[in-house]
Image (cartoon, rainbow, N blue to C red):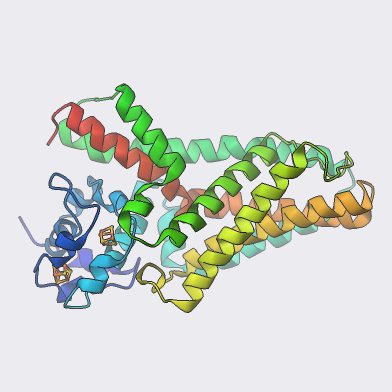
Length: 354
Ligand code: SF4
Ligand code: SF4
């Protein structure tokens, strides 16, 4: 096989690791709590990268099996940061599975991503503030359109993952309808339980569960257009109240934990933050804050208040920039890749695909 030395250079654009220092001692794989005999990492991935086996990496599930506890980086005698390398591979794979090429562009030029996100927010807000029609109706149309847009993106990614992992390798369509596999895929997707197996750091798992459950509930509330702050008067006894409060407070508390960890860099998993990681968590936080304030303002000032109208317009403008840029092209999409990797891993075992 011809060694492709440019490959490491390319992956390095997605993170701060130094696997050229790796001398293949194998400590990282030995210490990794998630690495298995038939799905061994991170050393195997490092070896592929060192020889530039791009196709092998593109068809690997291992990058998604890593939950970045950072134990491998802690024990690496060469400071090669294998945990950060695995994280970089996930960013790299997202950019390769994204047929539009937008993800690659946004990862390579993170400041441009911030600029585009802020610009979309400002243009949307300007338009909303000058909108003369029924804004509640307009918001409904926007919120109903979100799931359609995101579903296309998810379907595209999952197909590309299937193509790279299964179709390109085995030249045949394989599927798994095995109940245990489907159940395991759903459980992993909902609980992210590998975060717990990955390390003793329960706070990290808690922050992910808070953010994920809070955001999923926010999605349900907004995409079904259940929250209509310009049309209805809410109160703390309203049936929607506990749902909105749980959703927003979970996002805020989970988001606070994530931001504090990234800022203090005390843990290996938050030592190296890509600018897109910061944008992700800040935007999520802003969605939580703006939804909560809009809801509370409705309770205190009523649906006809100008302040509620402005806050709601800010909230929808934040959601637009979040959905258009952050959701389909960066970290958010991980939540689909991880359970998909579990499904494909079990599918391969079921059909004896090496
Ligand atoms: S522990 Fe470090 S040096 Fe050893 S194989 Fe892993 S990355 Fe390479
Ligand atoms: S970061 Fe944790 S899960 Fe990922 S490869 Fe290293 S030890 Fe394994």
